[in-house]
Image (cartoon, rainbow, N blue to C red; front, side):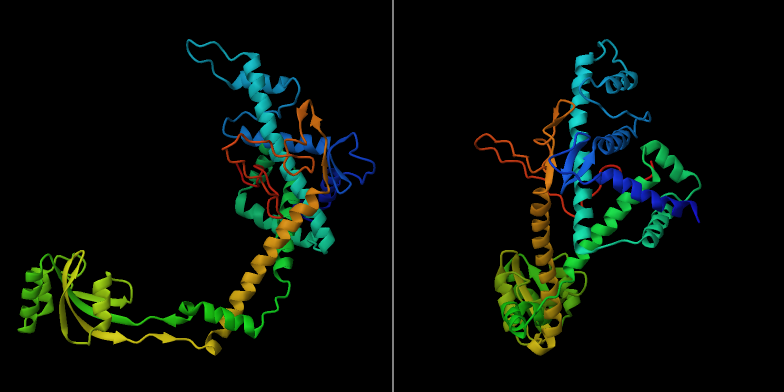
Length: 399
């Protein structure tokens, strides 16, 4: 058995630590959150806080400890160690550094609990829908990710050491991603009963999607004055070539150097008066001058390709696919809304942890109430956790 595959059984221990044991009668004393009776333990929260803190200090080089309320001693000491003293300025006081550590803690708290709660929701929803990922599939996905992101020997182990993660943490996040993907695929595959009447109605309401406009190819010259346009027209009618007259008389930078040729003109493409003249003109007859906001045009329609419209029968298959796709998008949007409401109602959070508010800070706690905003100030858009949002900054990326 390969070393990577031996990581798979360890995933069970991680899931056990993540959701804890089913509990009754409120949130147990060793937990910070309880989802559908399954606690997210303080130990699990602390583990992922350490990972999140390590990710914030990757650029600095020295791995930062997770800020721990209420005194933040380790965080303050780390900040003092890595903060260079500004010339002529006093070093930051402990009070200032404590304030910084507290803000960092609150930010990481939201990030980590957002991930852990989301993970619990995804695991719960997958179980209720009968969606599973086998050990074999997990092994395959793990090897793919490892080969892509850590191709050199020892890189993966270095990543684990620097990030504070274990191989089981990586496997957990990979499993959550696969489960979330399969949950959404299952919802999208729910049968859509598309009727012929619906197809006919869509065809009737969207005729432009099933037609091809008439196209006309032209030779054209633009001048500043009507007199110049009339002179250019007479020269062409007397036998001079469009190329020579366009070169000498046209002020249009697009066509003056290519013989005045303009191809594939469709109705509505040109200025209104010119457009009307083009699509009313007979072929091979010099027309104009036509006054526009740009100047005066003369032109000749050299060829015309008639427009065509697909019949309902010809368009039916593509319309059916379009309506199925729309149905799937609607079904998924409805599912995500119900998913949020369902699991939010099952998520209980402690009021505070370490003296820092928790339930009122995490939007995925059912106790959360959005703060009132002053009149005239738009409220913040709440973050909605979905089956796709199961990661924090602790992504599987080498540093």
